[in-house]
Image (cartoon, rainbow, N blue to C red):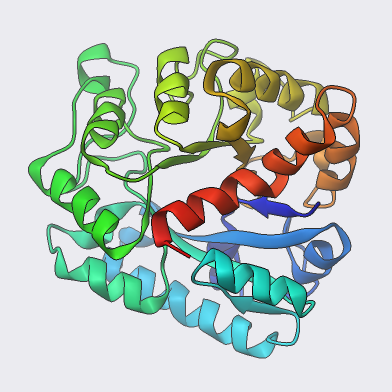
Length: 316
């Protein structure tokens, strides 16, 4: 079995610090680590961070990160290549090539302009995390305030979900308000994901999913990718531990189903990697999962469920 990880913030770190080598630089994810530790496909998010938005338009940030991404893909095409479908990922794997799956974190770049979805699709983007931590033209982020947290999608958000279904782009609800989550479940005709989230019942953080959200996601054929962020795993945890990651996976399996759980590490976007250190921690994690899951279940968690959602949404 190999690994399909549904979220990391490596691209923005590389864009911010071009002196860091994408091949073997001091990042939580680099090509050397991906090759050595069983990567099949890595979802690379173009995170539109508010730090850069203080001086740049969000769409210009996206284009800047995309330019960096295109450059490192071309420079390392003997090792990794962009994939636009599950078929592409499988073909790359057969040829000994890793796959990159391009995503965007924060639909703020759409700015109410539906034509930008087609532009994003043409760039090779196949997943959009609709929200980050701020309101945008699509809807509202998760909040501690109950009334704010229950706000749903805006009309443009509904239009965007429907258009993403039409184009074959995966809708991602991580960071989204609970009201927005249920609107996605209502309006999306295809499976959707929470690419990097954990279980609220085990750690009461607004970013985590309730039992009913987990059940709803599972019933929709979606997948939740477990996040290695310490504050989503357990309150006052110094850093991610294998024990806590497995605890959340077991719980989410019981609530959402074995077909609805996967990996969404958030490497290069979290404060500390804890016991995992970097992407290499996946090797130890898979070994430890053997005490709690069958081989077939681990295969679904590590790659099968994410690959199925790609096929279901994109069509191949």
